[in-house]
Image (cartoon, rainbow, N blue to C red; front, side, top):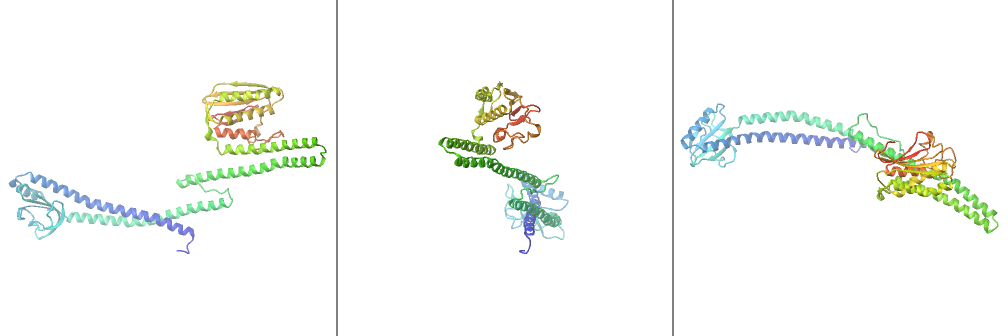
Length: 450
């Protein structure tokens, strides 16, 4: 046994367990069938005994003897034993010579009787019951067991002929099912080994019409797709951070080194320090934005959700950006309608709206117009920001929500604004949507179509 391969051992274990279960089930079924067959005959004859005792007990002694003779006359198969006996056991009427010693209680028993009306037969085995009559006499009523034993023998042979092939089929099916189960477990084990080794692209095979294990494999594959996507995101964030921080850090180092070398008075040193602090603040802003996006992606802030009045929130965002718009010569228009409340984090939602307004003012033309609107489309609230600029090209709309993407133009900033907006939207069930043409960007509430 120890020389077998792990897969062969697993097949034997699974197959043996399934075969043992099926064999046990077959044996239990056969035993129950046998017990029901034997017990069914006993219950049937005991009902006959109860009818005999109650019916004869209701008759007078002369009519009782007449009824016993009539019952024997009606017994054309000669399989009934009926006898009336005195309290001392002497026969009065019937086809039984003496009262069996074992038939002394009211419950039915199997005993040997001495028939008086079966030529050539001085003893027989029957199931009997003895009941007392009102005048002190005793009634013996019984049924010959020859036919019952023959029927039980037929049942035994039927069970044997049916059970042996069933046991063989159980063993065969158990081995086949065990081999299949071992193969499935081996497939999962092999997959986990590949995943642990770093081959995240490996997947389980799923048939066109999967069974329950196939459905489980599909769910495992979906989980691995998500794991691979998250790992790729983590790697991508690491690469992006390294790429985005390398240039500012190099510039910061060069500026500090040049300042230390060229500065000759306190004013020059102060200017160099201010420039270095500005660079450091920019780097800290990038790191803080990345940490914020990760926190939102992990849905760590759902515990702070509460009903939010979007109309008031959008109005607050307008009030916040009106001075900025005036300083830049931009006409900020706020068109707000009452909408249903949504569950969310008000500080995050206003941050998303603020990012959209900031982008509109940054990328729209100087002296242009920015419109912030809130509408109810059916049961879905929609927040839309529109400017007079050309908008996001269709080819870049799937890219602008990626971290650090700034498009074809090298605009100032870290390229994290729309990434943060999308993360906040995903957390709240909102969808970030771009207009077919123009510069409209919308946050569509939960349940809205993309």
